[in-house]
Length: 415
Image (cartoon, rainbow, N blue to C red; front, side):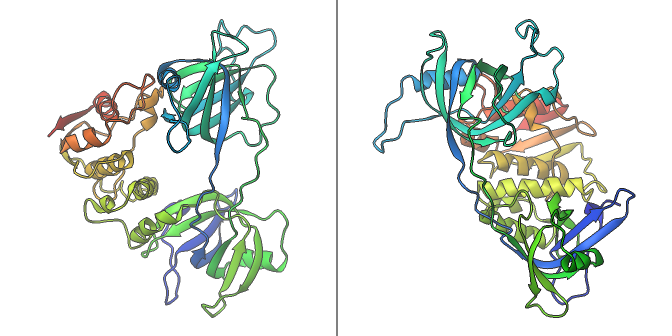
């Protein structure tokens, strides 16, 4: 049994919330600690917007549309340039093999290790101008949150710079380089996480007596009131910088970890975690009370629940399933509502949404064909009218979703 599928409990008067565990190469399971609570698990993300320039760019599709809008933009009363939103961008800096002809076959002998992969999250086009390198091309100034490639130095001297509609989407053009992409960035560290009321295992007790500089890598499990795993993160560094007897008494200790989990939820996600701590929802529409960021967090819980096999034992196999569309006012709401319609309250619809952006998988087929009756579909149409993910930026998001559902064998009836 995987650690995510186990039920975790302890003999205490207060509930268990977190477990640190690892597995040896031979399958031996090591429980490092059971913990009652955590401080600084929820951390406000640091702003990471950066200004970059796509130098000598030949944009296509939705990027071209954003560039054309930028040509006619004016400065607003607040002094900021009216920006054009174009959705997330993927960027691959693909090294050119000496002597090769990349124009003839840019994918020939392609190796993922011979490329740098970046994500430009929520970019906006701020300005564009004719490029000094080639008058037929443009330099495009964007602002975005940069992800990936933090260890990749230096900037390659000879490469193909290819832009995509997100990481797995269709191409949106090429450029000669991206000015500012390989700049040094300050290390953004989150505050140390404090684990409260920990019952250390034997291995952790030895580490506390004789600390090791390199620490250990563990899996961080968050469990609900019944002991079922509701979220987990692997390879969290167990780098203890301080320990003290816990105010919860007994032999419990409080531990301060230098890093904590690699991804920490924002404080706005705490109400969703509190709701799931009482167990998976039993009433439909429980997600609807949360704002969009809370609904996005809710979708992560449903995905984690599916991964722990908690919803696979009793699959829903009705030939007709009903989707309540009254609260679908954002993309995350659609994810939550679809999961609930297909797998019940707290359920998850397993689908590669990258297929909307051109992922070659084409979408995930369900176990058996069925009809999805989408009630109040106009709510989503109105709310998501300005959202689109297709390369050209022309098809409304709801239409792309309907097309994907049909392609994977689901019959949709709109009401």
